Image 1 (cartoon, rainbow, N blue to C red):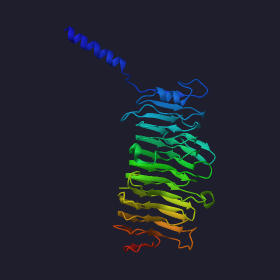
Image 2: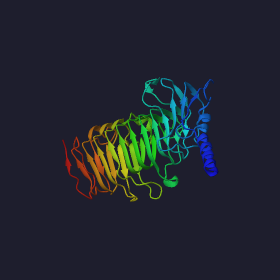
Image 3: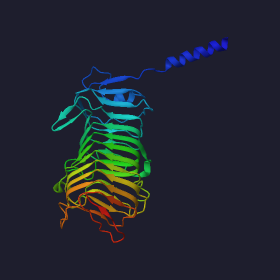
Length: 356
């Protein structure tokens, strides 16, 4: 009996020490909330907690030091309808985190409306992350890429990352001298974002990556200078990048992407990293400076179908107005039902095109 009573007492103490309900904290710069800074809330939050940030300008780049858990992320959101500016976020290697707010009440800054954070000055950065959602934020005029991962495999793959309905512009400062998003990892969904006035849209490396329903552009030749802008760039360096495999590029619009070297997609595997099994379908390429797709690779099983292009090679000389090019051969490639007609510049193999 005594042992049973002791066990019951220990169980009661354990249950009392556990917090059953997740906490919702308020962050108000002028006081009156749970915390006056986002960093203070980040220091206190544990799995399942939410930091709701109220209107104001927060001159800080919160650095996360705790992960959430499956079904119980740590969430940083904006009080509906408020306008919140923050200098950046550093996710470090924390996982199960949400940055931004569901698409509800909006703030308006110039021509941009958004329900999450306005982030300017520093990017959203990370070392290695898993199960992270970045949604409905306005990220602009930052010192680096707008969403800045490490850019190599040294930190390991970041997985199950969801980048949804954000506006990314002038990454790297006025003139757009940096890229929009750096991906080294697996199982990403990049959906519904607007990306403009940057050097490259997305540096894309890894497997099972879905890029859909995004709008790339405008960029201008004048702001690019000698840059080589691509909406999607995958130029694998052996030992430093993951090969692009099982990628779906679907329903995107690349519009007013202007530069003599401006491509819609630039897919390269000249070091034979293992790029394979990628699908590009139902995309639009309008007013693109150079080729809508340049496939400088001898990789396998690339499939392009039901894409449309208009006024591509607009800054190219001589103008040809539409071009998909394979410069290393088109091993296993299928290019079907695209409009208008495309051409193959490779001498290594024959490309069959079925135009609308």
